[in-house]
Amino acid sequence: MPRARGRVLVNMKQVEKNLDLLKEGNRIREAICLCYGTFINLAEDHFGKDRPRHKTYREFVMDLVKDGLDPSLVYPFTTLYEEVRFGLREGTQSVFMDAHKMMKRLEEEMRSKPRSRRQRATA
Image 1 (tube, rainbow, N blue to C red):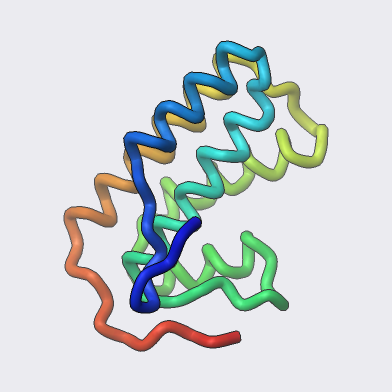
Image 2: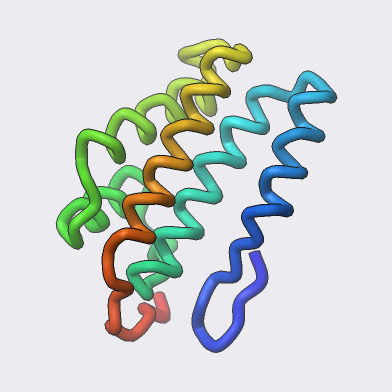
């Protein structure tokens, strides 16, 4: 994702177009991964910090929960992503729809809360 002045720029219209293209090409697994990656980028922007390279996505989202994200939304989405990403669950249209809903709900939750004023980590 492009960055400007220490912020991740997430163009949700482009993300939705890319998701449509992936679905049309029957690349559902990649579409689910894009949903989760978009959530991570939105969270980096909202909370003003990058995921340190030494942390897994799960470790990073644990920090986001400490920063105020709803764990009942974050952890199921993380589990769904991990199961699809690592082959424990098939990437079906139904699973994609669940992932897309989770991404949108987390986007809405972040938009409803004030942005962090903390400096972005440089790790």
